[in-house]
Image (cartoon, rainbow, N blue to C red):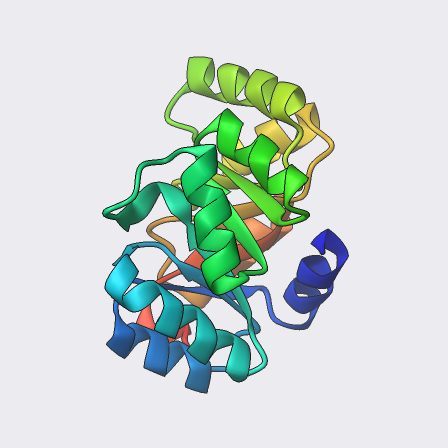
Length: 187
């Protein structure tokens, strides 16, 4: 599944991040091939994933941010059975491991705020071995480059990316794609 995501990002490195049904509707009309559902609840999750997949796009769920569910491996298994997403985003080691058991693409989100968090993030990535890493905030191209030099995992940049120039900077510094909720990038 990781290969499918990487191929999709080669075609279009923009990943649309959605928080609502309305944003999901805009995302499925965009040229993006990948959609991250980053805030939702169980009332909307099933329909959001269904819309995204029916539009021929890949659907990833930020399972830490599904309101009404705990961030546990059992909850992830239930969400998987209910929605059949292409993968998940999480900050939790146990959920990365469960995603691997379910043959889901796993994206570990890490926050690169300073030198110590960059070092600890690199250590965590090596330990957990996710399929992909998302580095936040994405407007920190130096962090993308530093972590990329320390780990052998594809990197997505996410958070606060709003312009084409920021996208290009992230890609030049080693990201394979960027996630953004900016309508300006949702072409």
